[in-house]
Amino acid sequence: MTHSRDRGCATLTLPVRGFAAAVKHPRWWDAANLRALAGVTGALGYACGPKKDAPEWAFLAADITTAPFQAARRSVVVLKTGPEHSAVVSFDFATPGGPCTRQVIEGAGAVHHTVLLPGAGDPMIETEGETLVARPRQSRPDAMFLNVTQFGPPLPVELIWTIDLAGIRMGDRVVLFHPGSHVAHQPVFFDVDEGELLKCLVTGLAPGFWDLWWRGWLEQPDLQVAPGEGVLYFESPKGGYYLRRRNGA
Image (cartoon, rainbow, N blue to C red):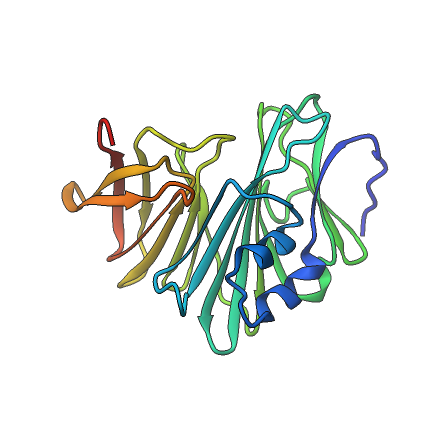
């Protein structure tokens, strides 16, 4: 066990200790419940689906900028993958105001918690009892933190990381986030080489109509990203995906 002695770092705190109650809430997908889970008061985007009255997933994004950060954005997705399993996928993107930034993940020892960015098993991950401290690479101008907290028998988690997106595959679920402090207007790309029929959620997209290309073919045109949501949900086999927003959408 190592202990962080640098208490002067600019810090983001992820309140994992409160996740268990939030995922068990009778209306776990409500925006108010997700705000409490994420430790925020407002929302930049919110959505749930694919059925609004009995969703399998829910998403919320919030501005968490505080001094000395120039900008910081938190996105969380709650997944209900079965009667005995649920998960919270959280992604923080921050532009530091100085060279030292870290994320404190409180209460992570109480459940099955996986750190994917900045890199599990790396010296940048430190433990303090049930608390994890993650630190990004100093060579990057921005800080990215990607975590998965699972309730029930844990499933294997695979990192997906491209220049356009950061996220995970867990079983037949794919969850991806745009690594920026603003929504994406430009095309994004990702590739998944496992899974027969994937349930994909791509977050952080600008409102409008997007075309989904799969393995070089236009598979699903005119998918709508609604204002105030910022997400696309679709189901498709494994392969390479390219999403492009229509001009003037």
